[in-house]
Length: 143
Image 1 (cartoon, rainbow, N blue to C red):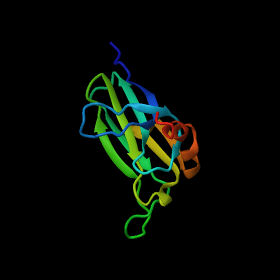
Image 2 (cartoon, helix red, strand yellow; image 1 turned 90 degrees about the vertical axis):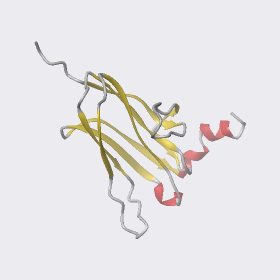
Image 3 (cartoon, helix red, strand yellow; image 1 turned 60 degrees about the vertical axis):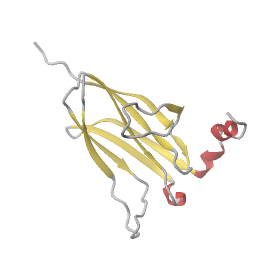
Image 4 (tube, rainbow, N blue to C red; image 1 turned 90 degrees about the horizontal axis):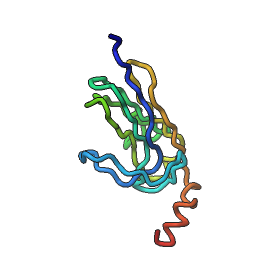
């Protein structure tokens, strides 16, 4: 009998409600977009849905847009690994913006790999100009 192959898909991407990484629940999507306004503590990323992949080790990387650390050195990409916990599993890969906000603009690329092969990736463009879009229009009106 042939072994079943894992299936990977991005179920949502964009701006999410504030997320607690220790919570069991994944964050709730607020806006499907790759255009992220440069705002303090905004949560953005994507959710990967994995079917038939229990036990697989996934490697993830977040490439920042040349953000300097406290010493002025460009930060290395953030890397990690996670194991698929069951055969119908979801994983949130995301980040948030912190002070000073001015040096966080640019492209943020998020990648998930299996055995060195990219299975999911999204690039988010963080710009100040996106802050005056539809989200801000409705926020100013109390929605």
